[in-house]
Image: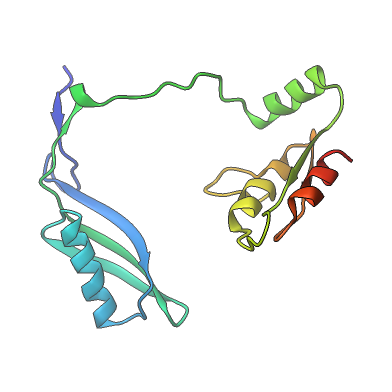
Amino acid sequence: MSKRHVRPYGDTTGDGMIQTSFTLPVPHGPRADGAALQLANKMGMDPAMVVHSKPIGPDFTFFVVYGSVKHIVDLDEVKVVEREYPLLSPSEVNATIKKRLRRKMVVVGGCIGTDAHTVGIDAILNIKGFAGEKGLEYYRELRVVNLGAQVTVPELVKRSHA
């Protein structure tokens, strides 16, 4: 029989223990650890422990925090939005493009106007991707054109029609 009300557990069932990780723009040290604990407390973790902190360059610190929460999840209140379309594997995507389009699909991307923040567009387009998912360059039936940063809208339109 499944339970309706559940709590996370780390050491013993239902103890409410969770682990989370995050980065703060604070130089590594005691003040950074204190900031991480304060944030964890505001997130509802009490008590909380910084179990790992590591500098990321001179101005940032990465943390792993472990602690207890009082929150309970009511599974009857969990709403899940079902995907309206099937999630295809890379080989299925390639086969579908090849079958339906009968040529490589061209994807043109870039950051328009004065936008110079290319991290997101690079994560989508580059083969390495993001969070374990491959970018569009991974798909052999896609030809990816990354125009980079600060692309004018007319330039983007022109390249998409080429």
